[in-house]
Amino acid sequence: MDIQLKRGLLDVAVLAAIKDGESYGYQIIKDMKPYVEMSESTLYTILKRLEAAEMLTVRTAEHGGRLRKYYCITEAGLSRLDAFKAEWGEVMLIYQFVCKEEKSNA
Image: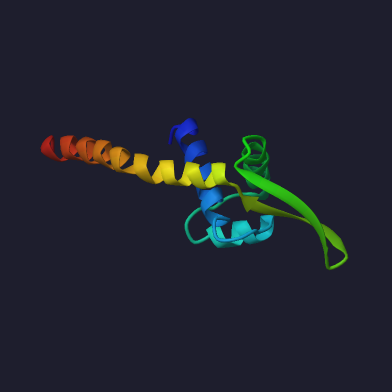
């Protein structure tokens, strides 16, 4: 898969994982696991990128004697999710066209 396409899809997947409430790294990976395999290093790179883009906020709190970072989606992050949903229809039409061409050549 094209790296830029995959990067964009993973960004949106992380935003979707926290859209219903704040979460932390391990929980995000656990929630995404049935759909997407992601390493911790990949996740934390994405979280930093989304924070820099102001699509999420982060707060630190103590949990079990350790500091844990909690991530929360912002309005900009919610807007990005909405834009993705709107754009996805166009992507699916392109996919259907590509598959149609392969089927007609078979």
